[in-house]
Image 1 (cartoon, rainbow, N blue to C red):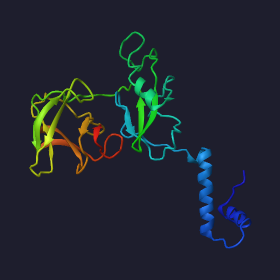
Image 2: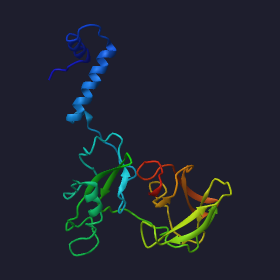
Image 3: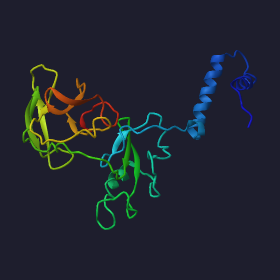
Image 4: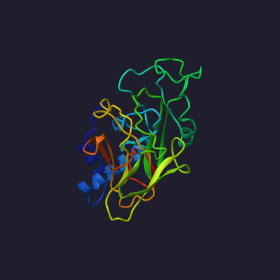
Length: 261
């Protein structure tokens, strides 16, 4: 097929326009035409590929949506390697995703899914959520990841307040996982940091995680005003630790009032 050059398009448009015609007029017309075409057609040149951030995890369903996504026009979710014959995806509505996201975690005998066992007949679901004009990519598929639970955060136990944290209690009325969560207030001491800490956790090894791992914590935010970041420190004492600082939630969005992952 012959190449239709930018200069030729300019010439063709100019031949059909009477009166004054400038390069700026042409660019306006051309951009408008391209926008209208892209609304109706998915051009091959508009196909995009991006890496999921963070990686796909088991029992984590909300991910940052690529900024280049066009409506819900997702083609595929490609594994890093070894795509299996059952690795197909279903694009469903937000509501259907929420109803079926945890199904398929067990095989037809009631045993936990073995990803090397072709008896698994669960669904690989993908959907989009657009609450408050924020795009979220929703994905549900059993993943053979390596998980380490540091603490369930469902009872006070040996946890204590840090900085301007105050009034640490267990909350069995408003939580995401388990049977309860912990909450605390921020005192009016005019400080800049409020949190919780625990110096009595059982010893665990994070050597497999600190170069290519992710950490997940659900946090309920009463108000995001003046909230800058969350910092997670994991180590042997207050002077020897690894840390992660985040300024957005797992969806890639700014912190907002309510539950944030």
